[in-house]
Image (cartoon, rainbow, N blue to C red; front, side, top):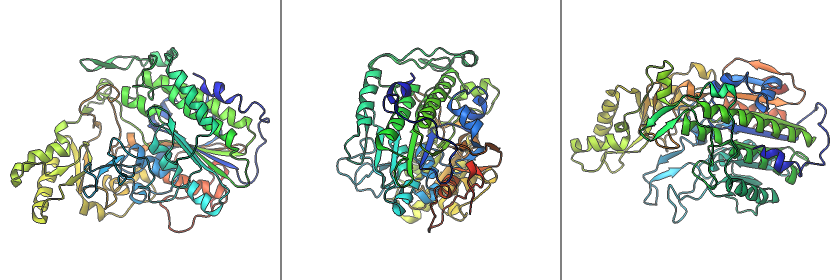
Length: 539
């Protein structure tokens, strides 16, 4: 589906020719996050890209060793770093969700992009809100000093649009499972109304047949994950009206890019008296990675299709004549399915023991302390775990010691760190490839929201203990296959460069700021300006 050509051609038909190489400050910053686009994937497919990725790699400043440097390599924490310049320890977004045992509602699980104080809400039926983001985004900062600037976000996930857009947005749109919607209460512009109509019509029809090229068929090998689930050689076909896998298809990213390009035209972004910011969250790669893993034919089809769609988007942006600058990165990487990894020689690849979940360990330990209910809270395998807050202090200390010992004795566990141990470590800065494991944990640990202890699984242990359709592989670990992501800065006329040094996504904001003349005032941020990126001169 070449949705950009279909959707934006009319809106931009009268656009002028491509502008000459610009001078001075760009009028529009476009920030694109490709969900689960690991640096490993960028490296693997770089020679095969011919569209947007190829152009950015050819013309931009490419940092192939970018890092989401923290341990909580999930969607919400990752997006919270991209346009804030801060690690999750400062943004407050420690994970996609966490446990707040003091929450007023009965459901104590909290989603990163919700307001849990809203009546009649729950973790699965929430009200989208930027409440939990504690710092400003680029768009927030720009509007604070230049109210005429526009701050616009569109994404496949609400949490991507929230974390990149921030609190002070002019427009914010995301897919809620049924339509493109917003948390702002604003009336949809024509672009969104048309996008909803177009996308509904598209979903009512079967997806176009994606014919795998030779480089994709070379990866087509089936792996039986469960008795009824096989992945590895699929072609991402979707039946008419099938909403289950609408997100795990190139059409999904195509729709977001089409909407982004059309919003530029309708809102006149980049044509006002002050610079504007457009944040774009592309989520299909993440859904494909979760559903099929990232080394099979399905991911090959997704990335080559996204490459074409991204190329269309850049062409449409050029046709506007706007002086724009662009940065592209990812919120995290990803781990392939253990079955394929073992087949390819990664002998330590395996699925986690489901009994490693805090709820399971807490249930097992409960009788030692005269309890019938679990003494631990939390469901995810690895990462944060909480003590039941109803425990008296003396019992809590004994439970903590027993839980830590239990986890450390498990052959799939690399390390366990208590809150006290983590908080003794300063938040690290610079050289993310050199950080110790506990430093990675510290960068996404916030003492009010994070757990009483943190469990680190060994490398290549997948937290997907019980795979199911749509969920065979995941991310979220401290290891570099989840941390390392590409970071590419582009501006027309800037000299291209490949930069091998390890940098961080928190470096994006302080690199973009001098490009548009934005002075960063207190409080200090975690990132640093990357001198020379897309022609930037750091002061």
